[in-house]
Length: 167
Image 1 (spheres, rainbow, N blue to C red):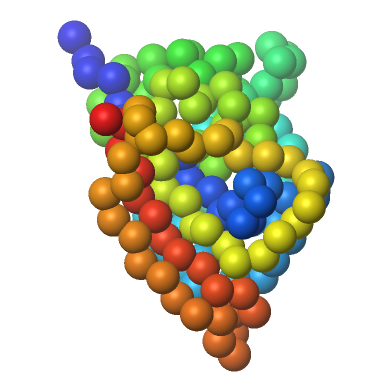
Image 2 (tube, rainbow, N blue to C red):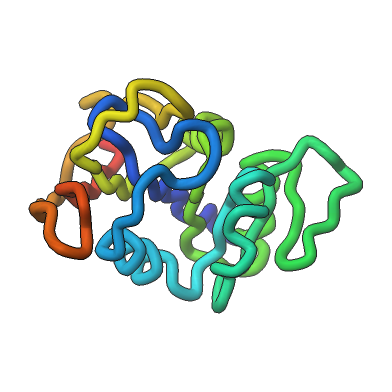
């Protein structure tokens, strides 16, 4: 019997808890892009359909799974799934050890109850409104590591990389 893969949510989140103002990423942070690519290299990604469409050029060595309500949707790259459970089952059958959920807010909300790990880039910027990331409460989450960076010439906002595990 195959084992369930670890489910990791990876997101860049504003100080007030938002991932975007409704479309696209609201900041250009090269350090965060490097962090994202490093963490997800060669991994299976679970994305909502709009996020998938926005990320089409990003899939190099990834296997994208598109979370959709449309059972007839066939993505040009990857596979369509109708639920987080179906994504976990497909990955388990393939022997995959970890799936990264990459957004948007509906995908995060659906995956959050199943998540084992959260990799959150905490961006030092207020958005005021938009698409929210689920609220991280301790417990059941515990912070296992964090690393902070100030704003610099290439990154307009300070940020911290935080790694949370379900207690």
